[in-house]
Length: 387
Image 1 (cartoon, helix red, strand yellow):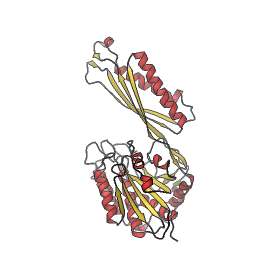
Image 2: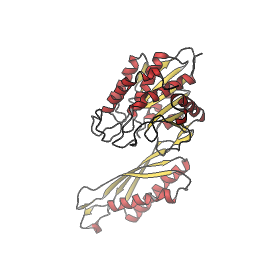
Image 3: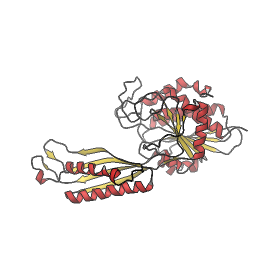
Image 4: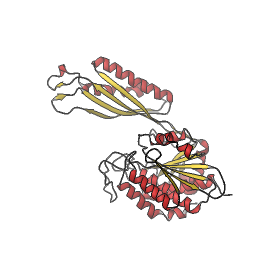
């Protein structure tokens, strides 16, 4: 069986929705326009709508045929990234410094396609909770919705999410049972030294020298402290210091991220960063403040729900294109926080194009919109069949 014909019939409308969202990106907890469009679309299809969870989150509720009491959640993220777009598409971002460079506009649109189909057909026995989540990109949108009572107000027995995947081919779907995506910590390291004239370095406690020494020292953690067979990444992604050619700055700020699959390795890396910072602060007679924040947990796909995704995928795309032995990803996803509460699975939908997500040139292939929508819809019909 291919993608669902009825959903294929929505393709042009879904493309128009996706491109409109793409042209008007909003970052985490600012998805006012986006959530408004989502709510309006759901209401226009006769779907019960709830707003405000996690700030800008939207929940749609659809009840199927029969009196079944099973409840399944389907989740899509809505936020864009704080970065520039460089695609020159007609529908490229109209908002400077804002870009749907991860394809969340596509995820939102796929779930809207599913919502319309399920509302029109109701070919399932139970309740579907459509979860449109804000602020996935490191700002804690999932945790905010959970804190606001997401699963108390809208209980789910199972939960499913997806992501587009330019590293897969069009028509490929990947699902990995067990640990599938790494945990993430974000860190800020603030150096307070002592500034001086650029021609008088002996009078300074040079924050630039301290920052570069610290950056190189931190890179030894994975190579010299983490067991080689364990997965870990430590990346420094920002260094801020200085304001003039002839001024040695007294302050510097480093930012970065830690990715691991093990609580023990996660703790080890954090402790080593703190120890290295303390040692360098002592050696250079400066102060280094360390802030390491738990951002995402490890995303773990349950075996039962992973098998559901695998079986459904074989009805949507060529069975030979269903990948179940994919490598775990060092990327992170805050859907992990939802899966710590509700059993479920998270899968990837491949598409044309080889520019990675979070790159200014990333382009989502609109041809996958009916594929993602069909996957979600058939999961519901498979797990909550009518009589």
